[in-house]
Amino acid sequence: MSKTTPHGPLLLGGFMGTGKSTVGPLVASCAGVPFIDLDATIEAATGTSITSLFETAGEAAFRQVESATLQQLLASPEPRVIALGGGTLVDPHLRNFALHHARVINLVARPDTIANRVHAPGRPLLDSATHPLHRIRELLTAREHAYADAHGLIRTDQRDPTDIARAILQAWQDEALLVRTTSASYAARITHDAPTSLAELVRSLAPSSTFLVTDHNVEPIAAPPIINALRAANIPVVGKVVLTPGETHKQWPAVHHILQHLVTAGADRNSLVIALGGGVVSDITGFAAAILFRGVRWIATPTTMLSMVDAAVGGKTAVDLGPAKNAVGAFHQPAGVIIHPAYVVTESTRAYTSGLAEVIKSGAIADPSLIELIERERQSVLDRNPTILQELIRRSLRIKADIVSRDERESGERMLLNFGHTIGHGLEAAGNYNRLTHGEAVALGIVAVLRFGQARGITSPNVAKRVEDLLEAIGLPTNLSEQPLDEAMKLVAFDKKRTATNVRMVLLEDVGRARIESVPLDELRRFFGG
Image 1: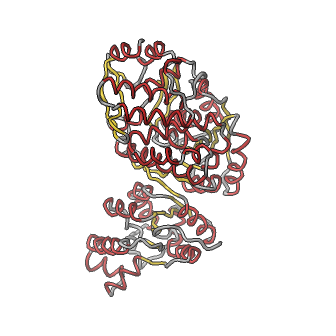
Image 2 (image 1 turned 120 degrees about the vertical axis):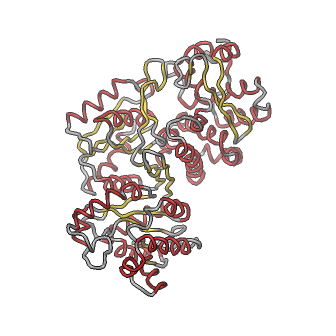
Image 3 (image 1 turned 60 degrees about the horizontal axis):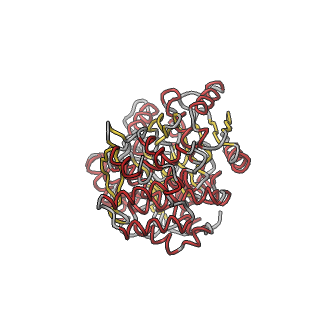
């Protein structure tokens, strides 16, 4: 392994016996940074062993010392590898602190593997156990949520330490944005090696069987390297479903096709489904996973700009019901998201530009600096400059991850992410899902609500002009006079956010600041002539 120095400290966590002390020094050596064992640091500071601390002071007192020691270490941001004790990050307050000050990678292994690696005495939580394997299973179950709440998971069963260290280094170098909802915690990982990162994620989840869902456009380009990487990791793809691409096919028959294939191929509740494609593939696959056996795990591997910055993250899965956009769906968070920005290079200009509508939406509601970046680097954005591309994806994902983490099921703040979508969905459906792309419809929907916001005295003319000018400069449509607004207004009645005679609209107060208002449908129809 070549030497490389990632940014910031790395915390290696996970249960005892997963290999932290073995592979930690290897990772540190490859990165050219110091290695610190947290338990050894505590023993040196207190002059006594961890076992003695447990016996004389009790676990609660030990945890206080452990927490204070780790926080002191993380007061400095320089890169280091710090191996943690198995229970260090079980406390949610310390875990939050760690996740904000370091990259947290947890090592995982099967209970039997751990039992074969650990030996009492010297393991305070196992020393008094009559049946160590039973006790290991109990502790793993109790800590399951804490271990999943990390920037990455690496499985260590029957693997060479050098191979494990290589996987940890890759996870340390990749950027990982956490989505932490009430139902799940997972990372959206931005990587330069999607097949390897995806294989590592699948391995960590230990599925009983793995399935791939993609479409005819993506399959020949992206599927073979991913299947080969999974096979190299001893993870065979049991079945592959190739969908017909396009929003017009995001209907129930596609879901039925996936379900029928998975059930026939022997899927069970521990199976895993990988969605490889754009927003349509993510939506359909996620929904199929949500309803199969009342929910199986799935991974999103987006291949378009639009799906990278929006559809793949957040767990909103759905299909259209005729003209009713996303009318049949479920909230079902993925087990992880693997984002490879280089896939965007294969998109058509129209598809890529369409995805930028969601980036502009994100900046408009929550991040003025993102709008400034696009304005300043417009040509680099259009040229798909790799550095700019990654920055656009990172900032957009950060906005969505933060909002979804606070409001998983769109009971409040998450509605802000629908800026431009209410009328946009109506225009998209009015064109039978093939006249406008989703992003084009969203751009027009943004222009429409900017004008409506002006009429209500909420959006200033300068703010509206700035956002509209940026949409046009990027190459997105902004001319509402060419659009069938009357037909779109009829379809807005199908919007999921409608309540009786009103619909909840996102209006822009300023760039970076939006608010949600309940608007009478009759008022919208009068304003837009529907």
